[in-house]
Image 1 (cartoon, rainbow, N blue to C red):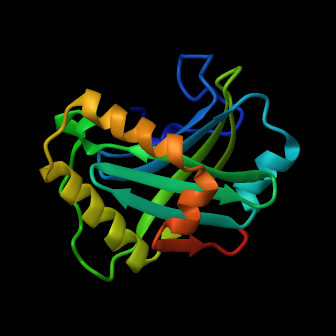
Image 2: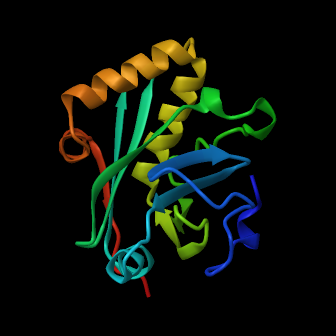
Image 3: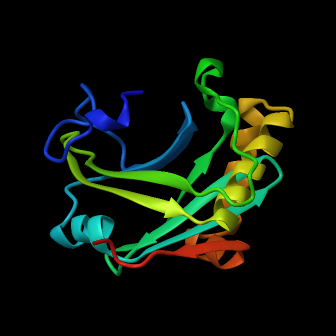
Amino acid sequence: MKPLYLYEIGKPYSSRTKWPELAQYNFCGGEHEMILFLNSPTRDEIYAVRKGIAHLALYVERNLIILLYKFGQAIRWSDAPYSVHLVPQEERVELATDENSWALLHILLVDAETGIIKAMRVISLPPDFTSALHRAIKDQAAMPFTPASYNAELESLYAGYSSETLAQMAPIHYVSPTAS
Protein backbone atom coordinates (compact mmCIF):
# COMPACT_ATOMS: atom_id res chain seq x y z
CA MET A 1 0.00 0.00 0.00
CA LYS A 2 1.24 3.43 -0.99
CA PRO A 3 1.71 5.89 1.94
CA LEU A 4 -1.22 8.27 2.28
CA TYR A 5 0.88 11.42 1.99
CA LEU A 6 1.61 10.58 -1.67
CA TYR A 7 -2.06 10.70 -2.64
CA GLU A 8 -3.13 13.75 -4.62
CA ILE A 9 -6.43 14.78 -6.21
CA GLY A 10 -6.16 14.49 -9.98
CA LYS A 11 -3.35 11.93 -9.79
CA PRO A 12 -3.55 8.13 -10.14
CA TYR A 13 -4.34 6.12 -7.02
CA SER A 14 -1.81 3.51 -8.19
CA SER A 15 -0.36 2.19 -11.43
CA ARG A 16 -3.60 0.28 -11.95
CA THR A 17 -6.17 2.22 -14.00
CA LYS A 18 -9.32 0.04 -13.86
CA TRP A 19 -11.09 -1.02 -10.67
CA PRO A 20 -14.37 -2.75 -9.88
CA GLU A 21 -16.99 -0.39 -8.50
CA LEU A 22 -16.81 -1.06 -4.75
CA ALA A 23 -15.64 0.27 -1.42
CA GLN A 24 -12.70 -0.97 0.61
CA TYR A 25 -12.04 -0.31 4.28
CA ASN A 26 -8.64 -1.27 5.58
CA PHE A 27 -6.68 -0.92 8.78
CA CYS A 28 -3.04 -1.66 8.14
CA GLY A 29 0.24 -0.03 8.94
CA GLY A 30 -1.56 1.83 11.72
CA GLU A 31 -3.85 3.72 9.31
CA HIS A 32 -7.62 3.54 8.84
CA GLU A 33 -8.43 4.00 5.16
CA MET A 34 -11.61 3.78 3.12
CA ILE A 35 -11.44 3.90 -0.65
CA LEU A 36 -14.57 4.36 -2.73
CA PHE A 37 -14.20 3.24 -6.34
CA LEU A 38 -17.04 4.74 -8.39
CA ASN A 39 -17.46 4.72 -12.16
CA SER A 40 -17.27 8.32 -13.42
CA PRO A 41 -18.22 9.97 -10.11
CA THR A 42 -20.54 12.94 -10.54
CA ARG A 43 -19.82 16.44 -9.29
CA ASP A 44 -22.40 15.85 -6.52
CA GLU A 45 -20.70 12.60 -5.42
CA ILE A 46 -17.28 14.26 -5.38
CA TYR A 47 -18.65 17.17 -3.36
CA ALA A 48 -20.46 14.81 -0.95
CA VAL A 49 -17.26 12.93 -0.17
CA ARG A 50 -15.16 16.09 0.13
CA LYS A 51 -17.53 18.31 2.10
CA GLY A 52 -20.89 16.65 2.73
CA ILE A 53 -22.18 15.27 5.99
CA ALA A 54 -20.65 11.83 6.51
CA HIS A 55 -22.75 9.17 8.21
CA LEU A 56 -20.77 6.18 9.46
CA ALA A 57 -21.98 3.07 11.23
CA LEU A 58 -20.24 -0.04 12.53
CA TYR A 59 -21.90 -3.44 12.28
CA VAL A 60 -20.15 -6.45 13.83
CA GLU A 61 -21.46 -10.00 13.74
CA ARG A 62 -19.48 -13.17 14.44
CA ASN A 63 -16.37 -12.87 12.27
CA LEU A 64 -17.67 -9.92 10.22
CA ILE A 65 -16.80 -6.23 10.54
CA ILE A 66 -18.80 -3.97 8.24
CA LEU A 67 -18.09 -0.24 8.01
CA LEU A 68 -21.20 1.43 6.62
CA TYR A 69 -21.18 4.89 5.13
CA LYS A 70 -23.33 7.56 3.52
CA PHE A 71 -22.11 10.92 2.20
CA GLY A 72 -24.59 13.77 1.88
CA GLN A 73 -27.54 13.04 -0.40
CA ALA A 74 -25.39 11.89 -3.34
CA ILE A 75 -23.95 8.67 -1.90
CA ARG A 76 -26.53 6.45 -0.27
CA TRP A 77 -25.86 3.88 2.43
CA SER A 78 -23.27 1.37 1.32
CA ASP A 79 -20.66 -0.75 3.04
CA ALA A 80 -17.08 -1.90 3.16
CA PRO A 81 -16.41 -5.26 4.86
CA TYR A 82 -13.13 -5.83 6.65
CA SER A 83 -11.11 -8.78 7.89
CA VAL A 84 -7.83 -8.36 9.74
CA HIS A 85 -6.97 -11.86 8.51
CA LEU A 86 -6.68 -10.52 4.95
CA VAL A 87 -4.08 -7.93 5.98
CA PRO A 88 -0.48 -9.12 5.51
CA GLN A 89 1.08 -9.97 8.88
CA GLU A 90 3.85 -7.38 8.44
CA GLU A 91 1.24 -4.58 8.04
CA ARG A 92 -0.68 -5.43 11.22
CA VAL A 93 -0.02 -3.17 14.19
CA GLU A 94 -1.00 -3.09 17.83
CA LEU A 95 -4.26 -1.21 18.32
CA ALA A 96 -4.73 1.62 20.78
CA THR A 97 -6.78 0.49 23.75
CA ASP A 98 -7.25 3.93 25.29
CA GLU A 99 -11.00 4.53 25.62
CA ASN A 100 -10.43 8.24 24.96
CA SER A 101 -8.44 8.01 21.73
CA TRP A 102 -9.64 9.37 18.42
CA ALA A 103 -8.71 7.59 15.18
CA LEU A 104 -8.35 9.24 11.79
CA LEU A 105 -10.19 7.72 8.84
CA HIS A 106 -8.61 8.66 5.50
CA ILE A 107 -11.18 8.59 2.71
CA LEU A 108 -10.39 8.54 -1.00
CA LEU A 109 -12.82 8.68 -3.90
CA VAL A 110 -11.28 7.10 -7.01
CA ASP A 111 -12.76 7.00 -10.50
CA ALA A 112 -12.98 3.24 -11.08
CA GLU A 113 -12.73 3.72 -14.85
CA THR A 114 -9.49 5.74 -14.81
CA GLY A 115 -7.87 5.16 -11.40
CA ILE A 116 -7.70 8.94 -10.82
CA ILE A 117 -8.31 10.28 -7.31
CA LYS A 118 -11.31 12.63 -7.39
CA ALA A 119 -11.68 13.51 -3.70
CA MET A 120 -9.91 13.09 -0.37
CA ARG A 121 -11.03 13.65 3.18
CA VAL A 122 -9.97 12.84 6.73
CA ILE A 123 -12.55 12.26 9.43
CA SER A 124 -11.76 12.09 13.14
CA LEU A 125 -13.62 9.14 14.62
CA PRO A 126 -14.77 9.90 18.16
CA PRO A 127 -13.65 7.72 21.09
CA ASP A 128 -16.79 5.54 21.25
CA PHE A 129 -16.55 4.71 17.53
CA THR A 130 -12.76 4.25 17.68
CA SER A 131 -12.97 2.02 20.72
CA ALA A 132 -15.72 -0.17 19.22
CA LEU A 133 -13.83 -0.48 15.91
CA HIS A 134 -10.53 -1.35 17.58
CA ARG A 135 -12.21 -3.84 19.90
CA ALA A 136 -13.93 -5.51 16.91
CA ILE A 137 -10.61 -5.80 15.04
CA LYS A 138 -8.87 -7.27 18.11
CA ASP A 139 -11.71 -9.75 18.67
CA GLN A 140 -11.70 -10.72 15.00
CA ALA A 141 -7.93 -11.31 15.07
CA ALA A 142 -8.43 -13.85 17.88
CA MET A 143 -11.06 -15.83 15.94
CA PRO A 144 -10.30 -18.74 13.65
CA PHE A 145 -10.38 -17.80 9.97
CA THR A 146 -10.79 -19.49 6.63
CA PRO A 147 -11.54 -17.51 3.47
CA ALA A 148 -14.38 -19.89 2.57
CA SER A 149 -16.21 -19.45 5.90
CA TYR A 150 -15.64 -15.69 5.87
CA ASN A 151 -17.04 -15.40 2.33
CA ALA A 152 -20.01 -17.62 3.23
CA GLU A 153 -20.82 -15.45 6.29
CA LEU A 154 -20.57 -12.31 4.17
CA GLU A 155 -22.79 -13.74 1.41
CA SER A 156 -25.36 -14.85 3.98
CA LEU A 157 -25.43 -11.39 5.56
CA TYR A 158 -25.82 -9.69 2.16
CA ALA A 159 -28.58 -12.13 1.17
CA GLY A 160 -30.65 -11.05 4.16
CA TYR A 161 -29.89 -7.36 4.59
CA SER A 162 -29.26 -4.22 2.58
CA SER A 163 -26.58 -1.73 3.57
CA GLU A 164 -29.28 0.66 4.75
CA THR A 165 -30.82 -2.03 6.97
CA LEU A 166 -27.42 -2.95 8.41
CA ALA A 167 -26.81 0.74 9.15
CA GLN A 168 -30.15 0.89 11.00
CA MET A 169 -29.20 -2.23 12.98
CA ALA A 170 -25.68 -1.03 13.79
CA PRO A 171 -25.19 -0.04 17.44
CA ILE A 172 -22.40 2.46 16.75
CA HIS A 173 -22.97 5.59 14.62
CA TYR A 174 -21.16 8.78 13.83
CA VAL A 175 -22.42 11.80 11.90
CA SER A 176 -19.82 14.37 10.94
CA PRO A 177 -20.37 18.04 10.50
CA THR A 178 -19.80 19.24 6.95
CA ALA A 179 -16.13 19.43 6.05
CA SER A 180 -14.56 22.86 5.97
